[in-house]
Image 1 (cartoon, chains in turn yellow, blue):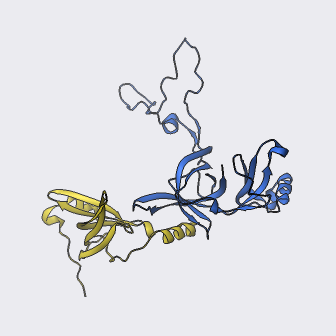
Image 2: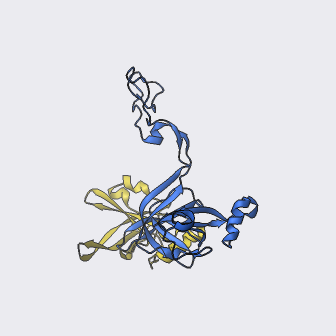
Image 3: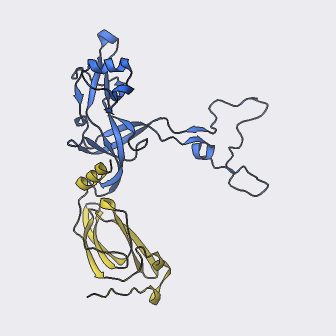
Length: 117
Length: 207
């Protein structure tokens, strides 16, 4: 039964080639928006708060500060509107969901960069 | 109206043609069998009887039904339904009706038995608000229905007053759902929205 659900997801939802990002990373999402007949590309740059769900219906939440107001957006990972995702910064965080970021501003909201090598 | 018996598999979501995320239910509808063709001459009315929903164990089938299925040269099935206005001129006894009955983008109704909720009060069953407060002398009647009518005139409770009682486990029809996808290899229908009943429950998809 679960197999049939998975089969439907696999056949009907096109999987995309996206970078492997996780909570704490800063990414830029380029996505299309439709205004009447015109299709335009917009981007949203922010910190990934969480990845949620599994398989073809997975979503992710990203947050940015717009002036002094926090803005969050949830995207389905395989949404057709997403053109590409750019990795800007890999952050080192200790948990998979970093909702504590919402309470932090300024210096306290900084996230350490992941050390490589 | 044409109809097909199927089994609810579960829910997922897919992206529609306009890129929107649409919640969907997957229904597996294995080919149904025509078990009787009723005609004006013989029965006095026109209809088509179909059976489906999976195999039924021989030992759990009443003898009368066993004979009925044998006549159509098929094995016992779980559910038998009959539909008037199902154009029966192109079907004969024992024919199979496949999922090709449906096209993508078509509107359908889905019939099923809703999940049983047991004996429920009026707040859950009918959406009453309850008394909304626990103070001002209220005590243990937060979810009470309130008045059920006037007093000495009419001296009775009118029929149809909404009260507590059995909720769910009842035949339910959801109308105007859209067929998003038809998978002919695996006999799957992907229907927009939710449909009544638990996973593995039998449903009838009506055109």
